[in-house]
Image 1 (cartoon, rainbow, N blue to C red):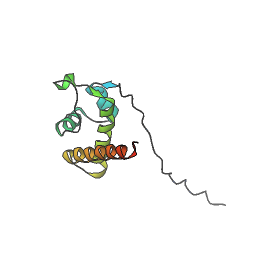
Image 2: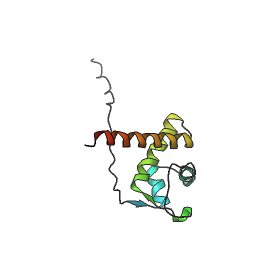
Image 3: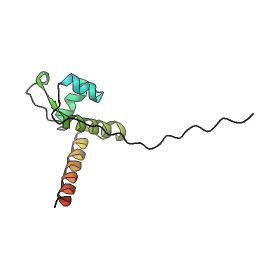
Image 4: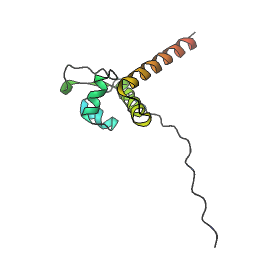
Length: 107
């Protein structure tokens, strides 16, 4: 009897997320979009990773760019074990690098 075919190897794939820059999320929507708890969201704000509009947690609003930043921070923290302040620093440096690359490409 012939042996079964080998299992398909996972391919390296990239996932692209398109976020509307005019998008505004409340804390519950942000937690749902990032698959995190309200406590984790508050920690991202306390660590300087996110800067919501609004003066209290109940009134916070997060823009579309904050969603991407939060998801990147959570990946750094969960996958690489980076702490909150370290993730904030890494994201700030990545933003600065992107700005410098854009400046070099500009005519």
